[in-house]
Amino acid sequence: MDNAIKVESVDSEYKYISDRYGKKDVDWKLEKQVVFEESGNHYDEIKITLNSGEEKIFYFDVSSFWGK
Image (cartoon, rainbow, N blue to C red):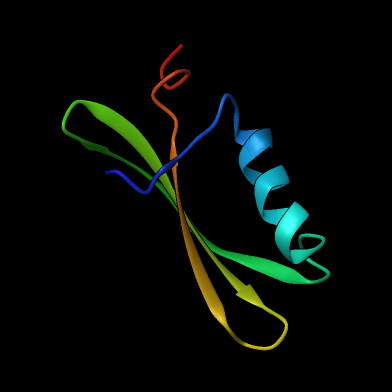
């Protein structure tokens, strides 16, 4: 998955989103978070809804820390 954002922790996933869209549960809410494996790597899919109703989906590469 070439478009996945490499991160070092779950906290850094939420920081990435908050830096762009504001505070969780104030400016946006979490709809779904799912970890999946593809081609031997682990990814976290996070779907959020902005206050405007717009949905955003992010893919994070969590291979560096998943299962450790």
